[in-house]
Amino acid sequence: MDKILVLDFGGQYNQLIARRVRELNVYAEIKAYRNIALNQIKEAGYKGIILTGGPNSVYDEKSPHYDPDIFNIGIPVLGICYGAQLIAYLCHGTVRSAEDSSEYGRTELHIEANPLFTGIPADSICWMSHTDFISRLPEGFENSAHTDKCPCAAMYDTSRSIYAVQFHPEVTHTQYGKKILENFVVNICHCEQSWRMEDFIENSVNRYREELKDKKVLLALSGGVDSSVVAVLLNKAIGDNLTCVFVDHGLLRKNEADMVEEVFNTKFHLNMLRVNARKRFLEHLSGVTEPERKRKIIGEEFIRAFEETADSLGKIDILAQGTIYPDVVESGKEESATIKSHHNVGGLPDNIRFERIIEPLRDLFKDEVREVGRQLGLPEDLVFRQPFPGPGLAIRIIGEVTEEKLNTLREADAIFREEITVYDHREDTSQYFAVLTDLRSVGVMGDARTYGYTVALRCVSTDDFMTAEWTRLPYDLLEKASNRIINEVAGISRVVYDITSKPPGTVEWE
Ligand code: XMP
Image (cartoon, rainbow, N blue to C red):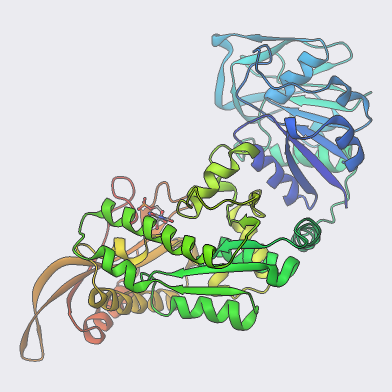
């Protein structure tokens, strides 16, 4: 299998570079520059190397550098942004910093022909994000692009197959970015475009089978797509040496806990422990109405339940987590793994000690994880599951959480979800659910007066959940959901639809 090394210098878009290469059906591996030595690069058999961007200036004392012999081992190199400046610096050119040459965002690019730019028009748009620039090219290099402010937006040395671009070809705003990466990976590095997601699965399974031989591994399984995919992947690799702990806190949606148990126990025969912690969660939530307090209690109780279960299992060597790329705040920095991973499973206790943590999906984007899940045979409704918050229905019940309110909300929520499934517009229904408000109102059913709770329905469309738009659901759908909820769920006398976008609202009500 041909593969490309993405040598990480701490830039923002590094994972995106790897993803773009994988989209070309060529495998890309990201390694922090300090974790891979030149002889390891040679031995690993990479067909090409991409030096990423990074926040530093090449002249900073602490800025990341690399062995200049990387240019003499016969593997084509492409430097992007900081990577381009590093090439200039290591090959004895000059890099300068000047505030008036800063460029951020969409920029007009003018190119001259070279193998990296095959099939690209002379004038196009690129995405820039820099203050430093290459002011004097190293010997043997030719300038092949400029912008209004940047005299050298690209350079190359074909004799050694070294290419450098100041802009970011990996972001979609660069009009011909994909083509540039394709030119590098396919035409310059001669990679065969044969990699498929099945290969990721096979390689991971083989790797973990070898690496985790005789090790006991623990995974907190939430039933969400990420931890579910890790569970099935590791189960394939190490079978019963993997124990999955599923803490059932009683704040899940209708039939959710049973569904998770059924999928993993019956279909995948996974070594799974379902911990029934419903009573203790409810007891601790009793009388609590303040949202942040609810979250805190749930987080703490989750830790306690997990801790007790881990203790009862004896010695565990390794903790596995379903961290995926968007969870890794400081992108590509391998050393940030532990901090984020703890956060990711709801803050695991410090006193559980593991040899190490593994995160098999940390290079993948959500849609790539879904594809892995699909290939592993996970059911569609689990693979395409909408996100569900860790604190569960507790933050969708305004006011005190009680068993009765949980049951009421579960029923209303299930009806709404059922109706949206019939509607089947996945693209504009990123997340949808019912909220049980603390508000009661008067109604009339038959000839009798009712005085029940108000349920709010919420449906949003979003790409990243940082911003979201309320979905214009068809009136017929809303009418049907509303009628069904009032008729089928006792204790509800009114249904409203939330038409607040984010910002100024948030997706969840609490
Ligand atoms: P907000 O309400 O902040 O939600 O607009 C954005 C997304 O995050 C989810 N969410 C959470 N997920 N633990 C989680 O795992 C939480 O405490 C939590 N709070 C919100 C929310 O469902 C939405 O998808």
